[in-house]
Length: 358
Image 1 (cartoon, rainbow, N blue to C red):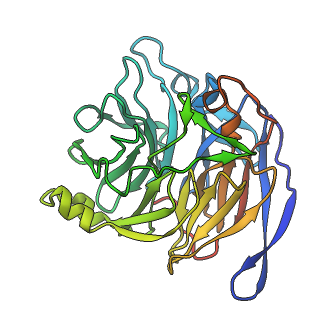
Image 2 (image 1 turned 60 degrees about the vertical axis):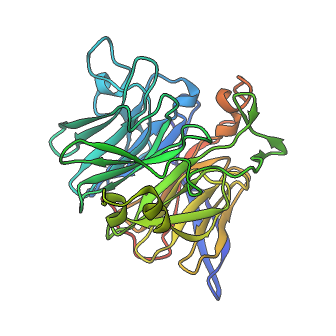
């Protein structure tokens, strides 16, 4: 494993004045460790999922400050289960909450019900397991990312599924009950826009990729959940109170969703205390921001930022983002691995107050 390469790049930000900020490579990885998403606990510990599109054995690692990695929570749990033993089938989304619980979204697969595994990073012990079965999930479900709301003891999940069934799932952490909401709504269904990267239309399953609900994040006060389809030009938000209100009809809930602002075709997102929603722009090799006034702008754009993916807000005032070349992975490149070795974690200063460990 390579140690971090602190190569700083300086770009101008449009903040009303010619302000300058840096994005830097925090840790670089070999092809054995393609990053997925990130989680940073309240004590600053960093955890990373290993992207399942590359078929690696490891699912989760802890990333040390020197850039080295170790399987997490341990070797048995960090790999695929043997029989009915411990282990993870395939993790993309993960978040660490303010109590130090690492929530890992272990997506469904053949003979495997989707679930959320909570691990206590303070006691290094299993906390809880919640299963996401039908009818909250569908046979077509692809459980992608999650936002954790400890204020209301809930987790909100994006189910990318397919263009017709994509939705959000609301999990009650007290009862374990899961509900499917906003299925096939204007706020979860992808737009008919080609995903063009490096001059090539990205295909999925033999057709141009049209990917539904994926990026999701929650503000530090646990008031608003921000979400969107990957293939869409808008970021939406809805109050946690409305997502949790089971008396609302489908129509009533849809009426309470707001268009927050513009965005590009994107994968991950996070939000700071000032309402700046950071978004990865996968077709532009860039990281951008949707501001509270609804405008979107590119913050950082570089050729070696190929498919910026997942975010985490650190305890140090930095926003961390993974780079994983996903459009060159076998799943999105007709079965061929055409990666160039641009696997890393980068970081940049948050624009507003940052809060970690929600």
